[in-house]
Image 1 (tube, rainbow, N blue to C red):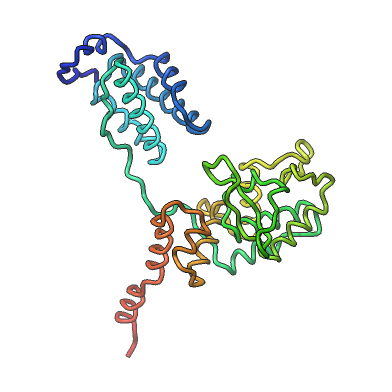
Image 2 (spheres, rainbow, N blue to C red):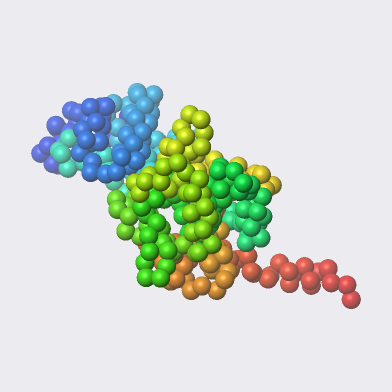
Length: 317
């Protein structure tokens, strides 16, 4: 596993060969990064895995073949998205090491994993999401809250992080519309907003009327449990709420999650005849190719080849 490096004519090559890949170097790289906390956490975990693998294989001065072997080892027990992010971290780490004159960039151009561009979660039909919402008991505070969460998520195409970050003050007016300003994924500010249908706004207001505290800076949705009553809901809690409501309606599948509500919103928009650019804006996709993935999936669903073949084979004359 501990193969030789390719010839290096750089005058710093001897110094480079003298270094080992250590936890201290990883810490220096992490400290150097200018990234969001979640990215820092991911890269830190990736480099811990890399160091652990080197230690397991008794590799102190790795070569390119060791990075390739690490990638193959990751593929055996990790999802493609994890492999991709870990190899990305390794590439950036060795790129930094070379720039600092510490070690050659042995991870250059190494690919992570081939990611399936298809969505891993299912969506619900309009009849199914209606069934989910109809059985929510809105005579309780928890029911009112959960119904409002479902309504906002499925009509606004919101992610769980956007729901968790929402505050009461984010309920505002733009022109003649009631809107909810949101802090999207990877965003530092609440620059974007979704339009609230009057029926959705009424469900949110009805829930807020049950709250003891409705200061403008309070979270829009809060916990009702004894241990954390009144505290902001976490993304995990919101995911659990949606999952429970789906199961209560008989939709219990690993492919149906809180994110399925976002898929549902985008899919129903396209099925309703909305233009691709309009749906892109609604979904807040930076690139229209992301929106096109939904369109391609619908095109396949509408493909009539199977029915034509079955008709030709089984049609009784």
